[in-house]
Image (tube, rainbow, N blue to C red; front, side, top):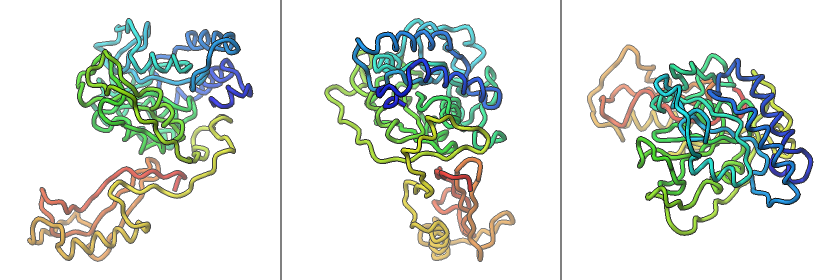
Amino acid sequence: MARSIAAGEISPVTAVEASLARLEETEPKLRSFVTVLADTARQAAKRAETQASSAPRGPLFGVPVSIKDLIAVADAPLTFGSRSMAGNVARNDAVAVERLRRAGAIIIGKTTTSEFGCKAVGESPLTGSTRNPWNLSKTAGGSSAGAAASVAAGVTPVAIGTDGGGSIRIPAALTGLFGVKAQFGRVPVFPVAATPTLAHVCPIGRDVRDVAMLLGVLAGFDERDPHSVRGSVTPIPIPRSAKLPKLPCVRLPAWAASSRRSTLRSTTRPIFGPPSSMRGWARDSKQRCMNKEHCSTRTLRPSSSAPSPNLPRHTVERSTGAMIFENACAHSSSASTCCSRLRFPWRVWTPV
């Protein structure tokens, strides 16, 4: 989108209006926004269009983005997903928001979060339950639920969330997006979070190149955060990426389905790197269990709920993109590294 705006193919006003129209279309189904800043966004888009020829353009010039409701946006509600903070209004922009504005981004609203960002699902007493665009009966994960759901549905190309114990990575895995929790100190956090050494401000998007560029905008030292890294920040390499096909329950806008991106139909491996064959990995895992290579006990503990030891099986949760392996391990203890059910994020680009 930024390239299209820079080339004059679309204007900031057109981009913002399309984003707000998409928000209005999907919001009754997804419940991904707690605050919509439509008037402010339109005014910012008009200013950007007027100043386009005279002012220098940032890398996100005219691009609509959303901000998670744990991050301060000046003069906008900052509710933390809680009824107890429903009347709270931020006085100043957070560092991340300041940098987005300098880069030319236009903020269209605040996205939902679980209460104070403390749950891995998108439910809060203030906004209800944020749904997954892949399957409206499923959660989008959390706590950056609104950011993930809105980006996956094509409301904005990128969004800003936070991550302490998986709050950007879990929603990214469940909605088929790219989310990055950078190294501690790379992105300054101010105002200070409740968990200053754990909480990170993080980008999420449909395209890995977009996320890399956004992380580059956010990164760098700020004196208000004593933990932020001083000196220059190493540029983030931007790899070749791919696009998501149309989601089953919502229609993507034209910019999200650009033909310049090739469709990726393979899956990405989990971090511990199984062989290319998923079924082979399950078979190898079961064999290691039967050979007692990584079990903490040699005592057989049969269970009525355990899968058959003769048939290791795996299933794919089709709506969430998370893969579950059920290993036929009959000899495991509660504290052992060998278990009968292993779950990990697994991005699936096409509904299976």
